[in-house]
Amino acid sequence: MTEEGYMDLALSLAERWKGYTHPNPTVGCVIVKNGRIVGLGYHEGAGRPHAEVVALEQAGSEARDAEVYVTLEPCVHQGRTPPCTSALLKAGVRRVVVALADRNPLVKGKGIEKLRSAGVEVLVGVREERALRLNEDFFTYISSERPYVTLKLAQTVDGRIATSGGDSRWITSEESRRYAHRLRVHATAVLVGLNTVLRDDPLLTVRHVPSLRNPLRVVVDPELRIPSDAKLLTDRSVPTAVIFSQRNPSREKEIREAGAELIHLEDLSTGSILRELHRRGVVHLLVEGGAYTVTEFLKAGLWDRLMVFEAPKLLGEGKGIGDLGVRRVVDALKLRLREEIRLGEERVLEFVPGRLS
Image (cartoon, rainbow, N blue to C red):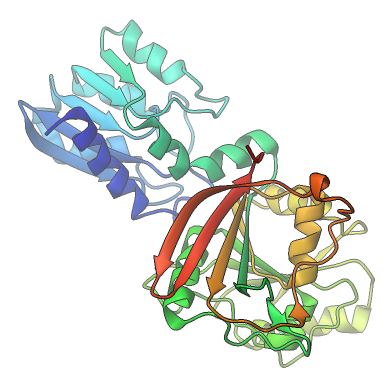
């Protein structure tokens, strides 16, 4: 197997645990001795052993003079677990191949430098782009002091996300909904606005695909108008947080007794909400709100990925994304298509902020 092949295996191990490791990055590791794989590892979650340590334990004494393939630069600092660089040096590995140098200021080249200073050969950059995609949410969380934001929309080919009367069930197929639930697996939290709760009464849990966890459910509800019988309050199997601005003691008491957490913010701007969620350890925020909520994120420019689920249907008059303040075509919000996925007759378009050529 080639270096790229071993790194692809390490990346595949890591990808299985995408979403479970927050607020830590997602990491996989493969240890090879004389062309034979002797250790496999991945990080399962905060406080659990890192991928390198898991792989080293599996390799045992065969780790000495072995090659290590790891998707992210080994850590050099003491956190909930000891530094991985120390474990690699103690095991006596000969060579470490790193897909991507860590952008976390606590690491940022220090792990590579420590290994090299101890005489370990280090190669950086094998499958770098795939490794960057794997942890782009973590790097945004670390560098921007806000969660990585994925916006999700389901629409017809004429850009309608609901009929003129507000009906939106179901624009896309069950296959597309399964894919959308995989997005929930990867998110730390999923956010909707009050209008979505009133219209759809969503549960916002992962149901159509296997998952070991559910994301935190977040509702932006300025006046605490969420109905007492809303599924987000009556279903206590998953935590719910309600973000509000206007005090209402009786409703606050009622919502707390229902088991939801209340987050009071005087400023309900998109930036303020993201700062608060970042403070609470939300690495990746999936926004599933309706037209108003998604429009607010787009207008603020506080988003990283737009997932458009498109069905081959026409609604004619109906509801779409709201007013972005664009008055001339030249001022349109510019996107870059990063990936297109076919799901039967439907497709998922993944856009990131960018410039049209």
